[in-house]
Length: 105
Image (cartoon, rainbow, N blue to C red; front, side, top):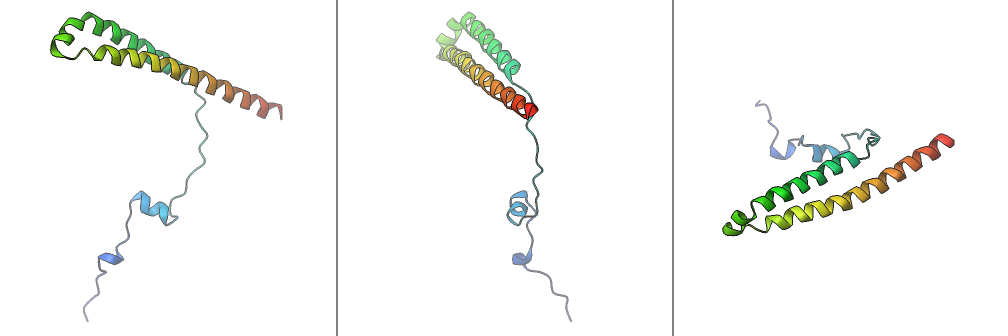
């Protein structure tokens, strides 16, 4: 007798999505890193400020090529950085307040 080979329907998919759907993957409980992100956002704000100065220096060339909108990209990056800084500070304060209550318990 000939040996039966499994058809395409019998193949088991091994991609992570299929494994998760079948319950084969187990998620480990990972605690969030205790990083504020404030330094990273500050570096980004400084980088956008430097980019603004550079774009300002080359503004005439950019205007000639029709790329003077890059000036506003740097302004937007700088402004959004300040919003991100406020978010990170608020988040870090909440994390620190949560840790203090855990220590007191």
